[in-house]
Image (cartoon, rainbow, N blue to C red; front, top):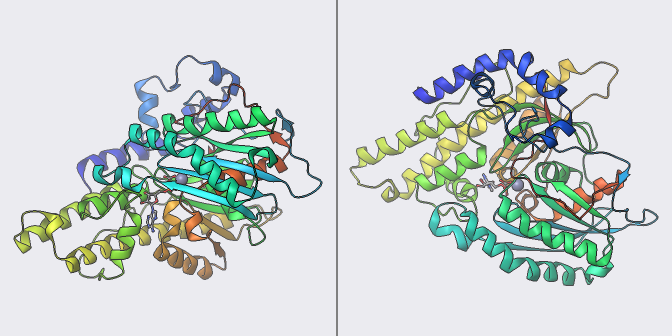
Length: 446
Ligand code: KG4
Ligand code: ZN
């Protein structure tokens, strides 16, 4: 049974879904980027009705609601370009959340050097990322991490051919640490500079190196902040065809980990996945979300509530005061049940997206028959193998980056930089800002 608040959210979403391609969405798109950039108000949806119509819409979808929207413009090298005559190198910096990631990647996809300063220990005791502490840790770690990555590549900052940095979305105070340092390096050494969108960087990891996937493809982006299905046509050309109405998948994993008293310092996903391996999902039945919804959207709030109730019931049944004190086997069964329902939900939505994509692609266009799974949760083996089977059953191929490169890292910033430089584009380091909210794709109903 869905919670009342979830039912209300679903109802308003249904209404907004029907209207999405009428007034508010189209109006938003007729507003030029310039107007948006110069609007004094960050939210264009000012009336109650407009705000209501957009409840449950993925935040990364560009409906003109924020001052800044990501725009990729090929052939606009504002701070020069690396020489394209032979393989070139890019220094990438990522500080959007709780890991300081730096890497030097060559334009043929070879990782020359990388370093990651994890903040697992910093946030462990708080049950989630504390922004102020994350910023302090980035400030302390950024220079040593850059030095470690450069020394592993046997290079100095002068030797790299370009600098790339994540500028959004993410925690603003954290993004700023990486962005300021990247700007400084680019200006000091006169290097081409490129601003990177974090979600695009996750998606583009599927094209890293020689084993990468060619456009066009569908992407399932499952991270701590987002859960979306996107149709990806080229660098900078993305359409969201489904998104979460409430929580992201990573958030749901993190909350489940907290409810079971598991370690959540670097995200609860790995701990839940490990525990689920020892559990039996048939012991506790949890509902698979939105089975009858004829779209490609997601919802994890109802599942999260059902999970909370299941934990509470089991705790009462065992007559113990705290759910953290449940026996390991009970916790494992709970973890397995959550993962089973979450994965089934992903399978069903991806199946719909595959069928919808196949039938909606014009016979003259390049057919899409590959799915890439990216973002932190893509490192989960159960998700990878179940989605791989769904793809095979439709005659599609599935690709996911190496597990360690699914979670945030410096390689993704450097590699996105390479693909943007290859498109003959770069940004001015002077005045480059960071954006907590940074919508990057339009929305299309399949
Ligand atoms: O992409 P990411 O590193 O950061 C964001 O951009 O948000 O994703 C972090 C999220 C966390 O919520 C974490 O719990 C989840 O990815 N995650 C996993 C696994 N590894 C990380 N979720 C499920 N299974 C995993 N093995
Ligand atoms: Zn991420």
